[in-house]
Every structure is written in C-alpha cells, then in structure tokens.
Image (cartoon, rainbow, N blue to C red; front, side, top):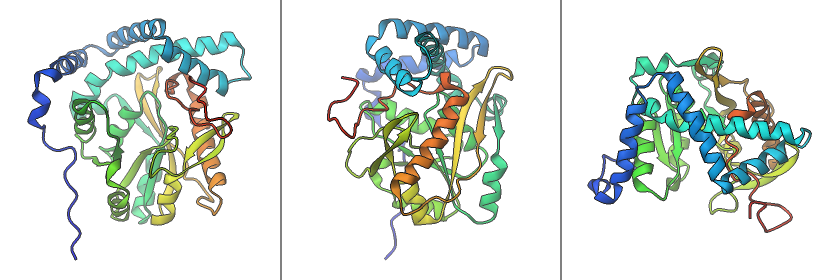
Length: 316
C-alpha cells in the first residue's frame, strides 16, 4: 500500500482570505513591508518605543512578563528585575517591526544580517548519516534564526493552528520561503519521522507550557529554580528515529548588528528511560541559553501556567 503524499502546507492563498474582513490585517502586512525597507537602526528605535508603549498600556502582559522574570531570577533584586522587564519590552517591540524585513528581504540581503555559530556540528552529523533535532526556545529572534537555517540545511518544522486564518497562512508561507517544509501539528508526527529519516533537520521550538492538551506528553521538571511543565516529544522523537538532540538559540548581537544563530554541542546521554531526567537536561540547555541574553527571551509566555500542586494558574 502506497503512503499518500502529504498535502502541501500552507496551500496557495485561499480566496476566502481576501474577504473584506481581513483587509485590516492585510493593511498591517503592507505597513510591515514598508517598514522592512527602513534602515535597521531606525526600525529598532521605532520598535523599542513601541515596546515601551505596549508595556505601559497592556497591564495583563506586563504582569505575565514580570511574574516570569520574578520566578526565574529570585536571586536578583526588584530594581534589576524591573530593568530586565524594560529591556525586554524594547526588544519585543523591535521583534514585531522586524517581520517586514524577515518576510520580504531578498536572500542575499537577509543573510547579510545573520551569522552562524556551530553550524558545522549539524553539517557533520548529517554527513555521518545521523538524524538531527534542533530544539530551540522562544527568543525574540527565533523566527529569524529558523528562516536563516533553512538556507543552510534541509529543514522541517511544525506549525500551530491560530485563531486568525490569515495570520496562520502568512506565517507559514513566509517561514517556508527559503525551502523549509512545514507540517501542521494536527497532522501528527509520522511526516516528521519520515523527514528525519530522509536526512532533514527538525527545527523544534519546545519550551512552551503546553498544559494537558490532547496528544501532548509532558512531565514536570526543574527550570530556573521552579518546576515547569515540559514537553517530552523531542526526546520521544529522538528515541524513535535515533536523532541527536542539539540545542539552538538566536539572539541579536548589538556589537555586530547581526542576528547570531548559535548551535551548541549535541546532548550526551539522552534519551534515557527516565522522562523527568531527560526533560531536566533539556530545560538546563534552555536555561543556559536564556541567561546569555535574558532580555531577548519571550517572557510574555505563560511559562508556569500548569502547576503540579495547584489547579489554579498563577497568571489568574
């Protein structure tokens, strides 16, 4: 029996996404496109101002980010944590305005803004016939790093469903523009397993708290001095395919004016038969990357939403 070919994702632009109710978002995309042609320093200044405005007026997001920073840096005083929150807000606003460049800059212009560190490790593993899972975290430059890597190695990744179908379509279409194959999470892991066995690299953001959603296997493991709900799917995929688990992070380097895609040494001794141990090893890699540039981690996520001893979320 022949396995059917996976449906192309994303599909060509559906006509329904041209409906007038989507026009405001299309206008926002047009504005981002124009901003993408501004000099980088102008875009960053505008973005930093936008981020501060958002922090000042969005009390809910400020509370979430502030709580995350407090829980992860209990050893720091309140003034230091407030300073980190302010710097994070500036980088967050910048990351929004960078989408105009990220989505539409030509390949040559795009790669002038990126530098790679440790990419040769992945290339060596691929040359040796070993599957690779690049597990990464939600830094504010993550999309930049994933898109850049797709120009250097054969890559696949997941896509989540979103409330707005136009935004979902645009994100998938732009992320795949340099050759990355995208699989919707709803399609299961079989296409990803097949791709790994065919020599493609899985770019896997997996630091979010996915709660108790169906088909999501999680355990509680230490993270930044707390207990965090942690996905076990990267380890399960590694066990299933024999893939090496390789940490990856992307941050903006102010000195060079470029995004640095950093690939760390492959994890050793994982997977094991102890799911909590394996999740702890992954979280330690995330924690190390976060502490290298804490202002560029996405603190606006509900990182500790699922608690092991209390059904109530700390975020209210």
